[in-house]
Image (tube, rainbow, N blue to C red; front, top):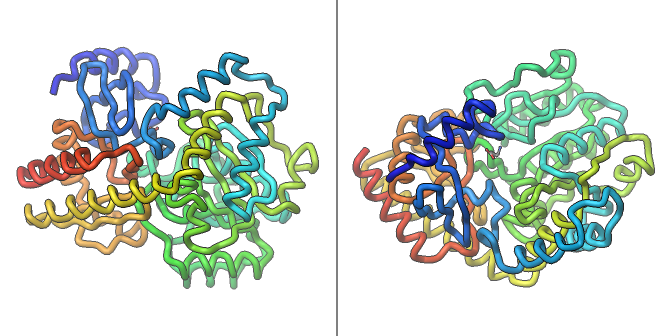
Length: 428
Ligand code: HOZ
């Protein structure tokens, strides 16, 4: 595959931006290749500046549940943009999106729109601290909740890609308030709460971890978090930036039957535009400015174009449950095919899936926590990734990320991907 135009653009970008990118994972550093520069995308495919066509399993890291440039979303964005891009003043679309999210997720009694998942999680942590008057938070190793200071401790996603899961620049005096436990470790959670439960402001968790590859939580783990936080007066923050309206129309909390105190959203609720949100219990959300003393603000928050993209996406998804059925079925077929290809090639592989999120690990498994993830053969992943890219299959360029399948993926896309995997894995 020719990547000469991408190579030229990347060389220039590297002199302008750190690593040539505006978000680390997309630099392809972990797999040792030049990232294709994307010219356009439609449905399940993306096309680079060299004219290469790929079946896309990144989907902008999650938002593209309907596939790229879905007609209804593009129409809503184009029509709304005619009337102005941002007012820094209220508009009706904010309430429309808020109502729809609250209808679908009953734990959300009040919501605040922000501009990214990072803003949402950062603000939710502040809300938990402000509400409880406590400083300590619990997160889980390998979970990633954006790049705010308190959450960049033993984090996933790009932090694992760089091999340094705790960021420089986070004051030690702040980092000491973030306790990191093992994902799915029920006993560890109980012990910590027994020891210092009355010091914990909140627990933040990805209900399906999607930033160390995909690792689903067990029902028992989530129920324990729910029970222990309630017992000790701490808040349970379920980070649904990835899973929200992806694993089901009622999100992961609907799937697992849990009622968080606070939930964070991003990705799908913006339909591809920069949007995030946090919301939950009324008594907590009423403490947010201007109602209460926990401050959080944003000039572009709730801007009409982003709200319109999110609304169009959410209306399409909530009106047509078939999107979920189709995307999940494609994911199951895909992962079965990839596993069969690995078996055929005599390579160890574990597949994890929840809905249309999935992942392969090059280890016999099972993979239920970060310690298991670390057993995966990264060199094998690198070779697999590069081989697949060459076959026109665009996967997340890191073992520590998810693949996202959309309802626009066709049976042909899935067959082509499995055929590519058979060829690539056999050659390794
Ligand atoms: N951190 C996100 C992936 N889990 C986004 C990566 C990117 O956009 O480069």
